[in-house]
Length: 152
Image (cartoon, rainbow, N blue to C red; front, side, top):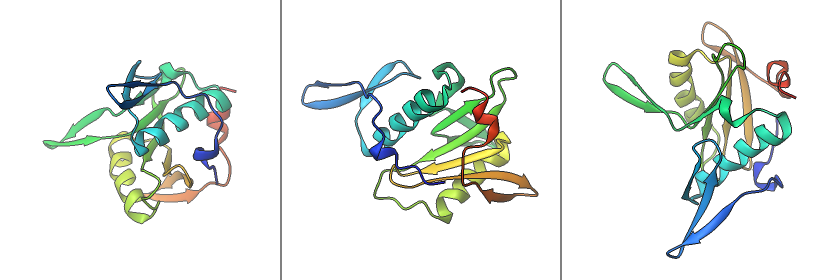
């Protein structure tokens, strides 16, 4: 699946304070410094909301989970509508960082804990979506899964 988030024409809400550009996060409901990674995160959030009609209320951003005294922080999780079970786990990087096996190893560690059926990695230019099939194996998807179509 190839989605170039950097070319997505979603409406980003920005402002400048003390010579710093800030971007509005509709999930966390506040402004954050506009870093390259934050730009990718906000474009994905808008894409999921505007193209797939996934409500902001079913998304969680930069939440920390602690396992065996080790803290892990995920970038974005989308929950299923009726059961609030994690459905999609996303790892986002700035555009200069390649979406390679190292990124999916990081996602896989989170997936082991959260049991999300779908994992997404994006640097804005390249977006890869995989499905957890069994025994820790993944299958790359060429299109959005039907489970996400339930919102549209």
